Image (tube, rainbow, N blue to C red; front, side, top):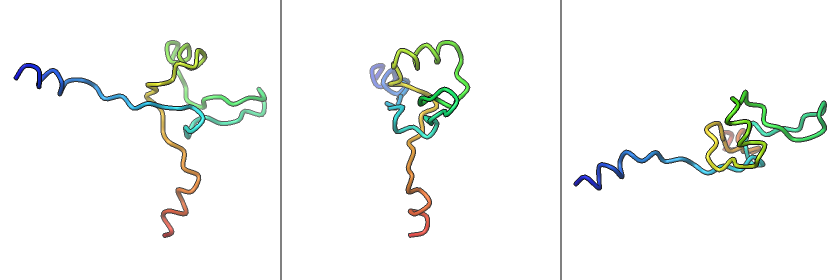
Length: 71
């Protein structure tokens, strides 16, 4: 019984990939792709070290989102 309770308390984190994120955009000023979210220091370290497997801001970017609404 205790084992089931501990399993229920585990936080499920989704995996992310910056290249498919809604907030990953090309910045013409810097000439490179960057994250448009305001990241705190720890999140920025993870972003710069490409350790973004558990990003809290990740949202899948679907360029055909508006087309799906029309169907």
